Figure 1 (tube, one colour):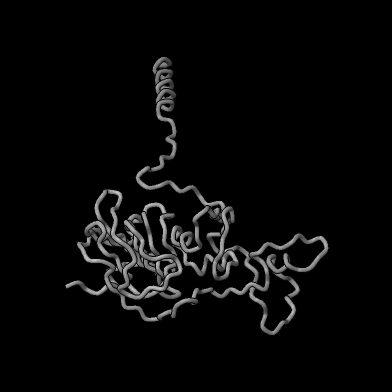
Figure 2: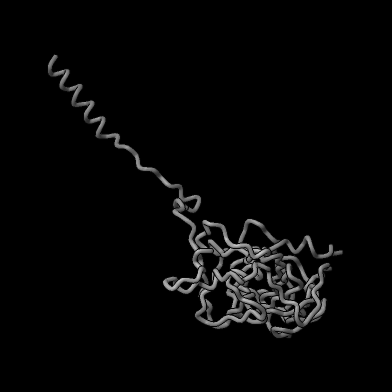
Length: 270
């Protein structure tokens, strides 16, 4: 009987050792996101060939927001090595009071930083009280239009449609023949013409008004330069080949920095 009790006790101990506590398993089907410990500011270091337009385009930001966050005014000049903020500055200084009343007895941290004091360090550019929060806009050189009437930028078969969930399909792709004419889908000002954005080849970006931009990628030859004012239907470039070696135009429309479905704005094809 004693032997049986001892055997039962030994069996229980062994069974406890054979079933250790399982560690938490993280599924690899979805990207693992660790718990956020606090907001983190993100910056872009300006490189040779960058413009404020291409930086805003690369990160899907509105140009006016990007300029405002970094206190950059028209003509939006930036320099290699410059660090640009890519998000809304925390504790941004409040707008000046219209009645010039003194601040409350307990000012915020951002306000306290700009009070004159012999021991206070020089304030950063993002907390200057005189900086307005208005959204700047480029208007020189052409008349902005509030109402836009788009046209197709080229002829050909629609090879790829827009997708809200696939980041590789921020626009549409239209197939054609090498050297085929690419035209402005609406009147505006050329704010970028070059090949500095990876994945677009030779690219043209047109600003139509304070809200809308359009882009034309994978061109063989550019026919306009930055700063040119173009009319709707005016030739911009000659169609080139995409990464697969097929003659294709990549066309995008963005509103306030966000890609929108061009098909919803372009006229219906017959």
